[in-house]
Length: 356
Picture 1 (spheres, one colour):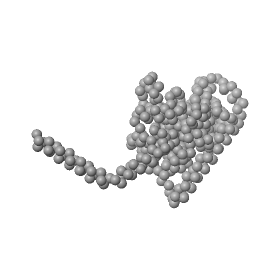
Picture 2 (cartoon, one colour):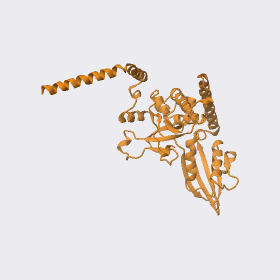
Picture 3 (cartoon, helix red, strand yellow):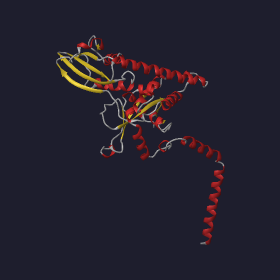
Picture 4 (tube, one colour):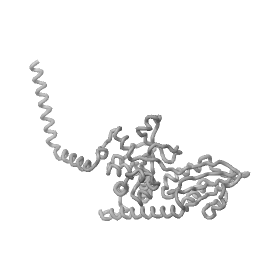
């Protein structure tokens, strides 16, 4: 027994010596790690400086910075025998297809032109024997267009669709409602476009000062520049009144007023990423808050904004999905701004078939 105790004691001392020798060569590494930790945590609230937040921490933080999802309301008013009341009075604020639309491409080009010109009505003529959109195709196009063109749909609140049939033909009327007057909407869009161009000029100028030409910036550097601008220059509204402002969920809130909720951050970031030539899209996640978790059935919580969505009272998180050197990355600028630069959510996604 005494011999066995002696062996255990020697083994313990041996392990201690090995450990000390190993640590003696790691002084610089330890100092470096401590320095990084101190720099990361300095001046931050407790919720802001953890590197990998556990699930319960993440849920609390998500409830602080996510918000409602603003989406254009689509109302199908069905078929009738007459045009909507007041239709002819729209005059120049209405866009008509001259002849019967004969292809999906022609239809999409006409709809895009209408969005660009901020019209109040769109009149679409179809010959049912040649071409007629399938049920829900117009709404599906709108959802996709809205997700990919936040500037051209800025201020658009509702689209009301009605149809008139006569023999082999069909006329589809779309009435568009905006949050403000048309001239004001056009002005805001122009201001947002000018602001985005100025920001992009600043980004490329900064690249030139650092010794590299704008055209030689890597895709990673471009995405980093957008991330840095959005997380530094835009803030999440602190007061409840400000958070309810309609501009906060749009690109104009982020780029003109520098106040935005998650959707405003994402839409503004998309405009900048588009301007730098990066392939990107906005993803939306429905967040299960502590209250909704008690009544909501478990379900997949991530979906593409192009899918048909039900307007819920849940809170949503908005992510910019960016392709960098052939691989998809994700960046949540709102989260970065709220946590003063926490980059947990600017990371490469898992490789899968859908991400390529």
